[in-house]
Amino acid sequence: MVTVFWIFVLSLMAEFVLSSMLYVPFDMIRALVLGVGMSFFIILITFLMPKDSEVYDFK
Image (cartoon, rainbow, N blue to C red; front, side, top):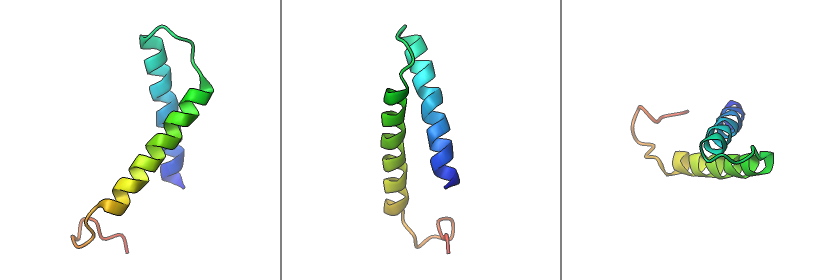
């Protein structure tokens, strides 16, 4: 649950930075879509990571 919160916060920050760099207004809907996409990508990566190493052993 903490990961989802931080992904949400980081996606809001990324949207703010990108919109200010491109001189467009901040859009909360676009930030939420970006957050869902980032969440899906990060969760997918955690499922695809090798689990036979001690580093990735989440027990």
